[in-house]
Length: 80
Image (cartoon, rainbow, N blue to C red; front, side):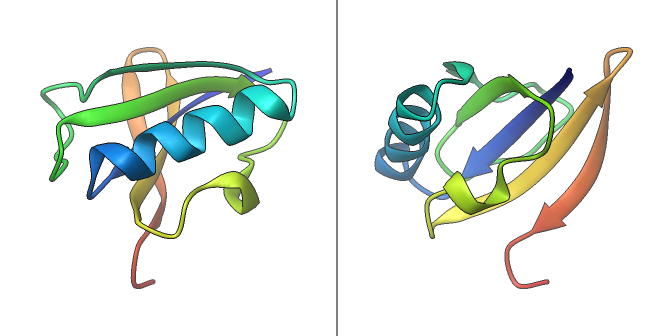
């Protein structure tokens, strides 16, 4: 299992993604964005899954990171 962090432009977008991940059966939690990352709203969703679940992210997502050994590896940023 991999651990991911998704950041968002709005708190609502983070909440919608959190709900979508939980509904799909993934373990997810909302939390403040780690200081090493940037986010417009300050809220991120941290979740555990086999794959990045990119299709479950709300359309206002800012970025997606893979978490490995307390390091954040960017997988996707809005606009790419």
